[in-house]
Amino acid sequence: MSDTAWINVVGIGEDGLDGLAPAVRRLVESSDVLVGGDRHHEKVPDFGGERLTWEGGFGAALDEIEERRGKRITVLASGDPMHFGVGATLGRRFGAGALAVFPVPGAFSLAAARMGWSIPDCRLLTIHGRPLENLGLYVSPGARLLVLSQDGGSPALAAALLTAKGYGDSTLTVLEHMGGPRENRIEGRAASWADDTVADLNTIAIDCVSGDGAVTLSRAPGLPDDAFEHDGQLTKREVRAATLAALQPLPGQVLWDIGAGSGAVAIEWLRLGEARRAVALENDGPRVARIARNAARLGTPALTIIEGRFPDAMAPDIPAPDAVFVGGGISEDGVLKAAWDALGHGGRLVANAVTLEAEQALLTFYRDHGGELVRLSIERAAPIGGKTAFRPMMHITQYSGLKA
Image (cartoon, rainbow, N blue to C red; front, top):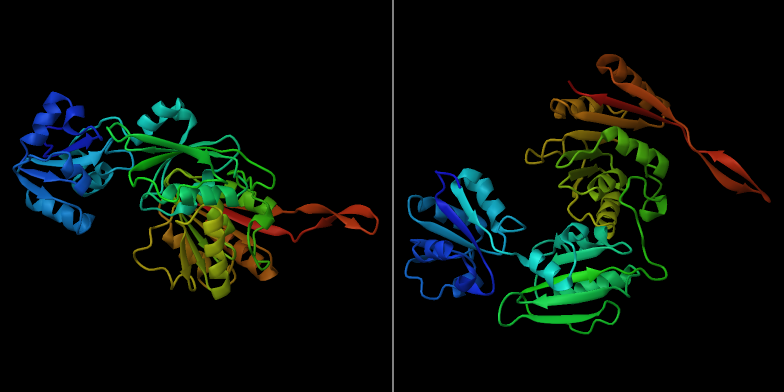
C-alpha cells in the first residue's frame, strides 16, 4: 500500500460485510464517503457518512471524489476491483499510488471453483457494457469461457450466438449471486436454451462444443479469403499473413489501416487480442459498411472505422499509430509521407503495391527512407479443362520500414 493512498477500493461479495477481513470492514465502516452502485450500498445498510453513486456516469462521480480529497473515501466494487472492475478506472484518473486496493474472490474465481475448471485454461471475458460479438472471437472447439454478463438476458443472447456459429451442443452454466444466500445454478445446451431471463447478477460458464457446419477460424494471421465480405478489394490470404508479419503486432499497440477495403488487415490485427487497437480508414461508403459487418462477424466490434481520405479524415482524438498499413492510395501525393510522419520512434510502415504507379512511389520512398522492398509472388492451383495447373496471382511489391 502506498503511503500517499487516499482512496480505499474494497471488493465486496454477495456475503457483504461478513465476507471482509475485520480490518477492511473497519475501513469501510469508518469512512467519511462511501462510493458504489446501489447493489454495493445495500451491503452496508447502516453507514452514517456520505454516499455517492455512479448514476451520473463515471466522469461526474470521479469529479465528486476529487472534490472530497482529504476525506476518508472508500469505493466499493465487485470481487476483485482490478479485474474488469472500477479499480483500473480510478487508477487512470488518480494514479495507482492514490489507491489502496483490497480484493475478495471475484466472479471468475468463484465460477472456476464452482465448475472445477483451471483458470489458466479458461478465457476470461466480459460482455458487461461491451458488445456481445466479442464472444465470437473466442468460440472454438474445446474452449472454456467464463463470461461476466450484462444482465439477465445475456445467457440467452450468448446461447443464440453459439448456435448461429454451429456450437449449439455447447453447455451453458449460469451462476447467479455466487457467494451469497441466493446463489443458484442453471445449466443447459445452447441450442435448446429456454431461460430467456435469469438474475441480472450472473456469470456464464461456456464449454464450447462444435457441431456440423461450425465456424472454426484460427486467430493466427491469414484467414481464408471467404471469411470476409468483399468486392475484390481484399489483401489475399497469403499476402495478408506476410503483411501482418511485417507489421509486427505487439500487445497494446495501435494500427492504422489506410485504404482498408474490406478491413481484413485491421481485423486480423485485432483478432490477436492483448489490448491491441486498430483504425480502418476507407473512402468508399459501401466498403465502410462491409468493414463494419466483417468486424462484427469476426469478433472485433471495437474496430474504429472512419470514412474519408487520408490524412484529412484523421481527427485529432484518433490514437497515434504504432504501425501503419497502406493498402490503397499509395500513388496519391503525400499519402506515404503523411503515414510516415504520423509514426513515432520505432513505428512501422508497411505498404503493398500492385500497379506500376504505386510501385514507383514505393521505390522513391525506399530510396529516401531506407527499409526493405520485397516482391511477393503467389500461385494457386486451379482446374484447367480436365486437369489442374497453378494460376499466378498479381505480384505484390511490399515496402516495410522502421522509423528511427
